[in-house]
Image (cartoon, rainbow, N blue to C red; front, side):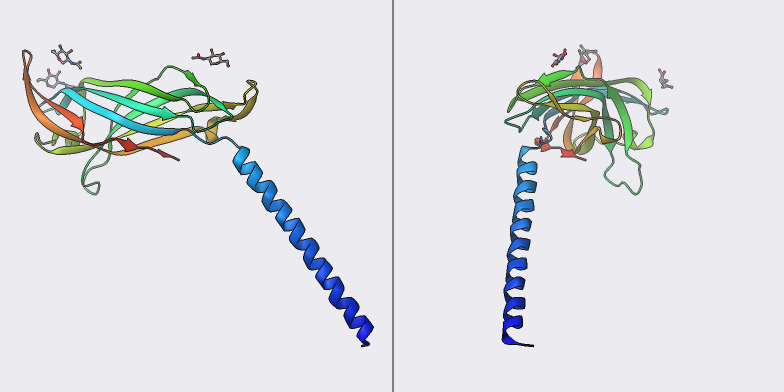
Length: 212
Ligand SMILES: *[C@@H]1O[C@H](CO)[C@@H](O)[C@H](O)[C@H]1NC(C)=O
Ligand SMILES: *[C@@H]1O[C@H](CO)[C@@H](O)[C@H](O)[C@H]1NC(C)=O
Ligand SMILES: *[C@@H]1O[C@H](CO)[C@@H](O)[C@H](O)[C@H]1NC(C)=O
């Protein structure tokens, strides 16, 4: 092999290397721009959860009570507004030892649709209630003056729109928004009113929710 040929091979390798890196940088920039410009999911937080009028009837473990919750929903996007259609909001009791007791459904409600402009925070008040409903043993074993834990789940359709109101992304069906607010620890106390003794409780601290 002459020096000329090996020089030629050397320079063409350099050129190929350069072109490859330019192309890679291009893809990287394009992907970064795509990520920055695509809508981000809203952020959910539980600010309060209070229990009132909670009572049990033995021996049939019938439960009555009210769970009042306040959620904050934040749109983190500067360029997109969001429409919410939260079709399902579920309250679940989360037993301390999940090996012994299964998480237990308590109540399900619907939340009115709402729209949210860019960067806005919206507060949702949700009132879950059960009245003389049969629930299995786990919920019947709650001790007053202790803490218990709940989970709230949201399922719904959300649409992102740009500044001109054009639809950018629509998440529904299998892609629907799923939010889990876990570890909502409530401290309980007994309360007495005209209607008799019952249990009441307050959320120990606000919790951020997970988007699944
Ligand atoms: C709790 O029960 C009392 C008496 O029955 C009633 O006045 C009150 O409105 C109830 N609280 C809630 C949050 O429903
Ligand atoms: C949300 O906005 C859409 C149009 O962008 C409108 O049709 C709808 O009624 C609004 N929903 C609420 C709850 O305001
Ligand atoms: C549970 O027992 C109480 C008192 O005996 C009764 O009033 C109530 O209807 C029963 N509830 C269920 C769901 O069986």
